[in-house]
Length: 303
Ligand code: SF4
Ligand code: SF4
Image 1 (spheres, rainbow, N blue to C red):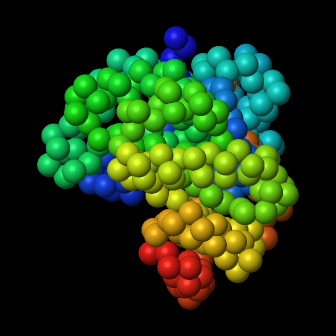
Image 2: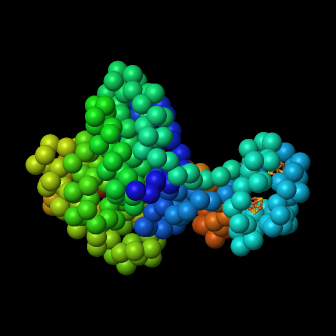
């Protein structure tokens, strides 16, 4: 079994499920949401990242690179057509400004890292969250990891975009999960395709099956909706999603307030964001968030 590509394992998280958790971020995603707040996790494959703020200007990397892929007059610093991902520059960089994104990690290596924090999970009601990217790109490895975590009595939560083969998911992954956080971004299929790269047909169909399955099994299933200015935060989109959830007897959902820090993360991995409109470069106001919440409450949803 091929080891999955992991781009981060974050300990002591209080934002990704109940209690204190470790979050394992899997690299690669079947969607391509233009506002992805983990852009370093979107592409399948190892990458190199450059953080301008960390660079001390020593030029060691430029002298090290045999491909001449690094240049100050490149707005992203790295020419990704030339770069062969040899990582000589990341090893030579004294400041950590250049970094490798994504490492293959075996089940044993992931376990070794997350089991260190088991006492915190036990005392706080926490556990391990699989996130990304999209963990279900690695169904077999995720299945093996979850089974190992369950033998240690650890609460397992999956954060997912819902774009996966349901039969494989219910066989390989679902049995070992305690909770699922399931993102719904746009209700209109064409809008979904425009902003996320694919239609939402599979996502909504999987949602309908999983809401019933988790209800029958007593597992937590929490729909989440990211609030993105002028894309997902319209009354029409939020109203359509809220009505859909209500029609499936959902009583609780989570709205994810917009985080404008992702463009900076995008530029580190060479994704340009110059064409963004001004509303996407600032935090969403509390009045707007309250208005979005009110749309869900009108549909009897606790948010
Ligand atoms: S990873 Fe290798 S080829 Fe790419 S920029 Fe660094 S030294 Fe050059
Ligand atoms: S080696 Fe690191 S600190 Fe030095 S110029 Fe390159 S990126 Fe900047």
